[in-house]
Image (cartoon, rainbow, N blue to C red; front, top):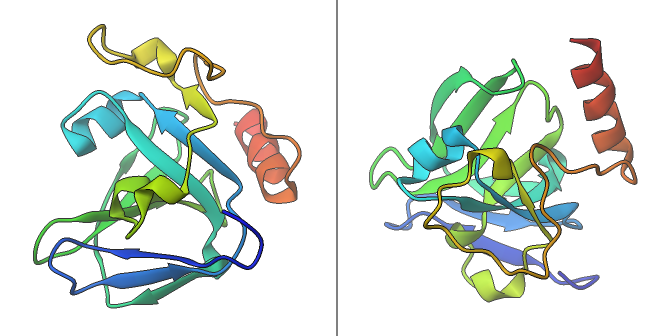
Length: 155
């Protein structure tokens, strides 16, 4: 996402809309079992952004479960059409993961990495030029994500 560009998206029925008003921290294809179960496919593409930079119109329903790293993972979706919007959680803290497929223009983002490749299914395919990480990729250049790593290391 270019500086000054604002991305928007929402659910399938249009009851919930959002605007992203800040820089994306990362765009990854996540292969964890949790994402596979939540999407019904091999991976999901997520865009990390500070929660404060998400302007939400409408109230999503939520479902919370324990994630692979031990923290809570909360999925935010439309209670009417079931369209997935974003994921938040204990360990990402102030960072939420927007579902790239819920963007009005999903081609505006490009995956930068593949994460949780240890859980990837054999039939799923990825751009061979992308860096692949067996679990979470190192993202130490952002203060919110440095804090995340410190929290995870403390567990």
